[in-house]
Amino acid sequence: MGISVVLLAYKEAENLTFLLPKIKEMMDSLPEEYEILVIDTKEPLDNTSEVCAQFGARYINQEFPGFGGAFKTGIKYAEKDKFLILDSDGSHDPKYIPSMYKKFTEENCDLVIGSRYTEGGETNDAKSSIIMSHILNGFFRVCLGIKAKDISTDYRLYRTEQLKNVELENVNYDVLQEVLLRMKQNKPDLKIGEVPISFQKRIYGESKRRLIPFIIGYMKSLVRFTFIRYPILRNIFLYGVFGVLAFVLDYSVSLGLAKTVMKEVPEAASIIGNIAGFIFTFTTNTFWNFKVKGKFLARAASYGGITLLGMGISTACIHLFKNSMNFALLKLIVLVFVSAMQFVLNKLITYNEKIIKSENQ
Picture 1: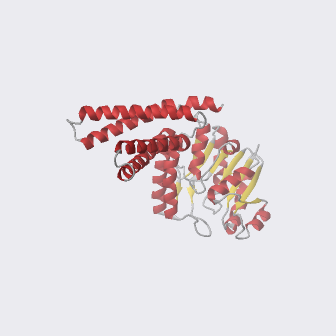
Picture 2: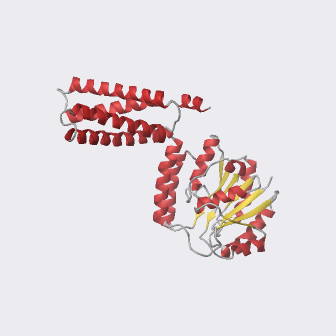
Picture 3: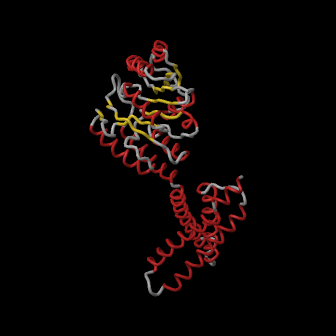
């Protein structure tokens, strides 16, 4: 039992001098033991270690890169069953700790957020940052299926065991959304509470966030998290990408052979191009898209059979409607229909998840 209070520091010694006494005062008012962990940069950049020693905080150098790496380091070394994290720049006032703890324990929450955007909360950040924050929160709420109003802040109280049971990959601030997604995957009925806070500007120093890399990183993560939550969308996307690349490969090989060594037998050139496209799509979908191993020949036969079926349907449709429709439009419609059909059949047969799971057990 107890609470691990975690602060991620990057040249924050001056702020920690003011913050640590306030944290200790609030923690002393709670009926639980606690520890304070300050996760500093891999190589010290100021006298943070001396400040930690002065106020009885445990000083740890981060072992993984970026903000996400500092967060993971904190999780690794937390020894209590509750995990409280807040900014080390003074923007998160420790006075809200008791109310967050009360909500956490009385309502049996898995996570409590010190929220700027729930009723009663406020932020004194710049207007541009507020607008961007609202936009990001809106997109990520939909993407993650999280109903909390403020999911881009790191003023949070977690259950340590739940944090230790997730694998985090992001190295930037978007790890704050990733951890919610991973926790919800492990516990679909994840209970999140919010306590209103007033977010203040940092006491000393400058923000470490850089706007353009920050936005680009979040856009990438939005797509990645959507694919994690809905893996079928990732499968469809990659299936389409590999299909387009296979078409280019097929066309290039066929055309190249037909114009050089197979001028007299363009049909043979076309067949070789088809085979090259088939090998490419089967290999990429097997190892990169659906990520399966074993029974390679059986899967190849299944994939090949479905490919031949698609070719038969495509040829029949073109033969039936070639005189009544524009060929380019007909080819496009047939291509979309056949590709969708092949994806569904491969998903159900070649890459059936139940079969794959039984093979891996």
